[in-house]
Length: 414
Ligand code: NIG
Ligand code: FE
Image 1 (cartoon, rainbow, N blue to C red):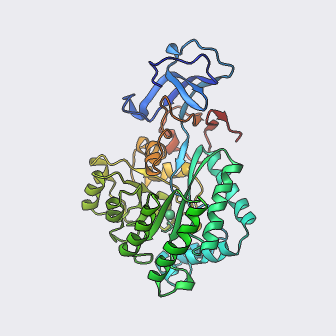
Image 2 (cartoon, rainbow, N blue to C red):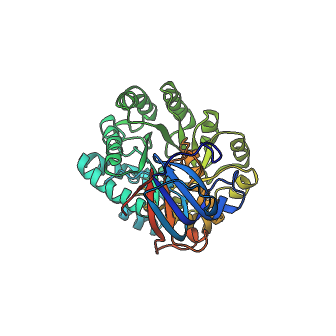
Image 3 (tube, rainbow, N blue to C red):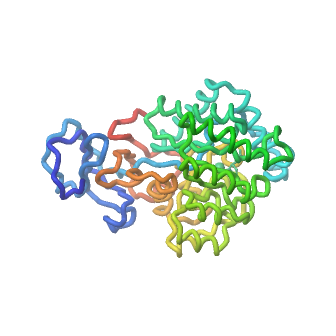
């Protein structure tokens, strides 16, 4: 329903006295799609009206909230996490500080495989309890939608366990969870020296089992010299397409391996990391539906120096999303709010680009509509921030400015 269309008889919720960061610049042309001195109204969990407070239609509403002049944004979307896992890799953090590289640790059987061992051993309930703490932590800083990958099971049984934990989280919390199958994350010990055999196993055993149990929204992989080749990933993606599952890829993280080109050709949702993305592939991205997802937490934690080609992407008007990549190895940083800051300080995104990265562009990276912006008909997922300027969301870290949050128009207790 457009603002101009017939208005309802009642609203369920009205938030008055707020500045709206609509993130909808097509309609509201100021930075952040800002509407100052605004109000927003909700009916049946959706935005029913928004605009200047003086234009708020005179419609009865039992629940009217005074926003006290604060800023209201869409709920934040973390479009790339690995938050279901057991164990810790603090020992590897120390090894890296003593000079060993992420790649060397992985090649010696540590890295992802060390988390695989811990995750295989953990019970469903143990994994769920760990994941609940992490979801709660993200939510406290305004996250209302989270993508969660499998990929620490690397066998059918444990991949199912991980994705069932991700599914159970939606029972514990009002957040939306998107579940991604990342079986092609590393070659497990059972298939050592036979990565092709492992890809075949994923295609013939794991993926059908997950589809059968309706556990997957998308299929991901790790395309890298320490992961899988483009040919191996293509085979897996062809299988995903047969189930009509969208694909996405960890691509160009440690080298220019051609993963982004592949995911674009397969009309995938996103290419994630992209530090080593070439100018040619930036141009290719600009003509595609695929969204680059920047992961400043991994860049930061691995002390990387190769920056993603932000300037080129910006000049080509490619929408850039940002995720926390929260995981025990490359990004043990469970904070999307911190990513806003790191995206600015490391990648030189503007605060506005950063916020777009965790709202409307993150929604695009997950193939979701009706979230990530304040628009009539969109889901009433809101964060109310006690800030004086929207750039404060990226500028400060440590003091949490989130004062209230709603998901589907319902207050969340933080
Ligand atoms: O996004 N690059 C591969 N996967 C993860 C790291 C996972 C891990 O180290 O456990 C990432 O950085
Ligand atoms: Fe990742």
